[in-house]
Image (cartoon, rainbow, N blue to C red; front, top):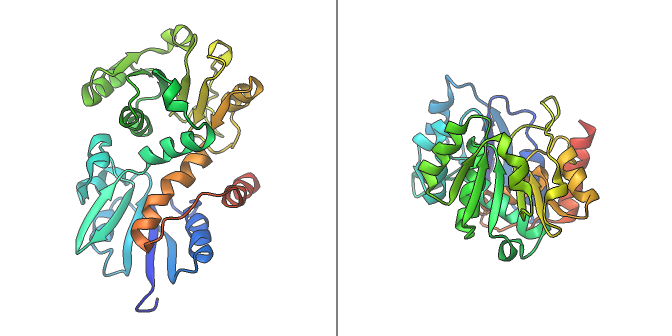
Length: 279
């Protein structure tokens, strides 16, 4: 690495499967930046030391994937989004201080804005499936955008109730048994679980009861078109998938590390989609 070159990385365990190097590498080349982006596979035993020595390793920041988001949060100075969600997925060095945020929030919202402009103006209530870390990011994004009622549906009701404790009364905990009734006329449905992902249990949701102008989002990107999204598209509904979210969540980190705010384009989407479909 040259004295001027800036480098960032994705840190996970495992990490070699990550699409982030291809994604950020595309932007580095497109914007003619003297930079590099790598994958670092770091075990839980070594993660604290690695994060603490980012600067000495030549890094200006990093993306954080599972299972390190909690420790990254603890070892950094989190912003409002990371604090609200309780996990960090993006780190950057700022005058020697290690700061963090959670760009899953803006990734989810950015993907919705791109796929269905004006969705928030016509949505007074949303349904979010799942109360894990991804669900927290999705719910917080909806709250930031002013959605006043968010039904959080989870197999374990206590976890959905914990979401209400964290975010307030805009969150309405619900069980899967209540889902069919909640779907009637709903304007936004977001799957924040791993259901429907390749190798996981299927997600069985009847989208026929949704409003005719509803939007359906699925954070899963393997496969790119889940059965949930296929059913929504068959109805002519706007949809957003996990790759859309992945691309939009990467924007702010790249800007923080390399000083250029990149654009999400069809060419980039197609590049990553081809990589996913070939795997």
